[in-house]
Image (tube, rainbow, N blue to C red; front, top):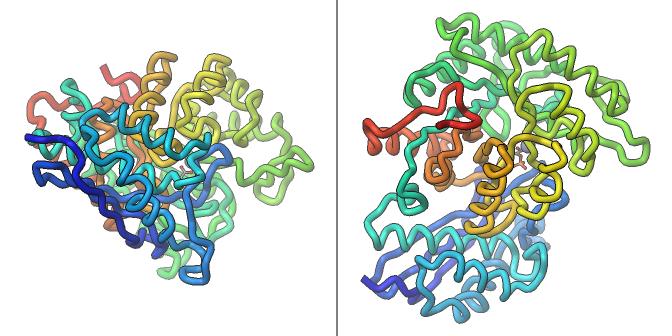
Length: 423
Ligand code: PGA
Ligand code: ZN
């Protein structure tokens, strides 16, 4: 076995929205290959690592030929001969070669593709599933957050909050969680057709329904009704991604919601009222990405899981700076927000050491690559957000988790109600 990198290849492929993205192959001296695809966000945070887009006519400027060329012409000669299993050394070399704080020179998409493909190649060479390669103690199957109603930047409706999710926390196993999720999905589909007509049963970017709803409570009521029509109501709680960075107007310092302009206080009062009526256990980005005070107040006053997405950007520096202030108590972990596997693992570890939960997340622009399924089990995170179930790029992750559950056999533990600290 020779784990040194012999060759790196890359190409432009398409994500689920039909936009180009980067796919990387890392080939080792012994001939083993690891392949990884890079996802892309649409409702992005300002502090994310920067993906490189060509800005040319083709694909409306979204081409990634420059990022692909950077992998082959700049990264490959530099990391050739490095041991693919020395992930930190490899990632440090990639970061140094780029030389910018946000990976904008070579592109976070170029860098992440190499970082993830190298991990896969090393795991393959060692004949280990990736989750076990990441962690010999990997055993926790996550609670899947099914975002069954999509709004915000992910849907062509006027619903402002981006994601309305169910958490099947009362399932005994991950496979039972999927059964429950699909039962709710089907009931919700029927309800949406009954209320809004069959055209409303089309789905948004992450596979949830995107009916012509404006009000948050109307979306919640539909979801609750669907849940109550199944036999699983006592096994399900709810979560929201408010994604308020995109509702915030820095000029007025207010949030646009349901035709009103709300101050931080008013939005907080809106959340408090909502929590009185619905068993919501988790809220992501309840305030905009730089509103540290808003996050501190939400964490203290709402007493539920407050997840930092745009707010923390999987960035160890932001986690260190913001979490100890009591601003959020969970990290949304998206590998492409930071751009290397080792920095993403650092982000998770920092979160744990600050008593935070970790929710591994898809991007709205995904491919069929299920790598986050291995990652979520590899870090025993307890929660995964990977869309609703009928789009193939989402089922790819669920299907990988079903395989992992079977492989782990009796050592598999479904996080369930302990999704925040699954031990
Ligand atoms: P994105 O959205 O992938 O479009 O950024 C996901 C999220 O906000 O959680
Ligand atoms: Zn989000």
